[in-house]
Amino acid sequence: MTRGPEFEKARAEAAAFIGITASKSSGRVRQNLLKKGFDKAMADQAVLYFIERGYIDDERAAEAIARRYQGRKLRSQRMMAQVFIQNGIDRDLACRAAGRLPDDRETALELCRAQSSSDEETLLKLLLRRGYPHGLAREAVKNHMKKENE
Image (cartoon, rainbow, N blue to C red; front, top):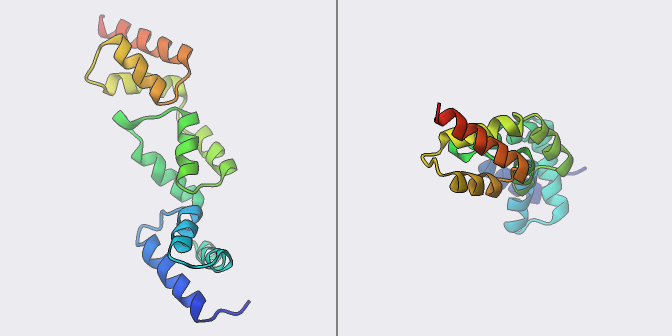
């Protein structure tokens, strides 16, 4: 495959977007290049160039994304899979990465503890918005309230 001036422009744009952290997903880099006017083939070629050199690694990108969702920002595994996909991670990898996160029961209780509110309804609504199943959310709130009242 020949690499001409158009590839060098795409490569330079991708490098600038990736930055020094090298934690951008292949999907995000590809979307950025398409937005900058590069055609799909050129964007794919530039992304592949950086994948082969280790500058783009979707596993590493998923880990970086997961680190941003700790403490008061916790989400269910199902919701995190969606967050990964929205950040340009392939669906299969997103589901695998979400499956490696802490169990929903554990994170739901942790999220309750991280909140300043001790109102059951408020906590339940929060957990539901964060993607936790209703039964699990109810159980987590109940356990949290029980521990708080001890």
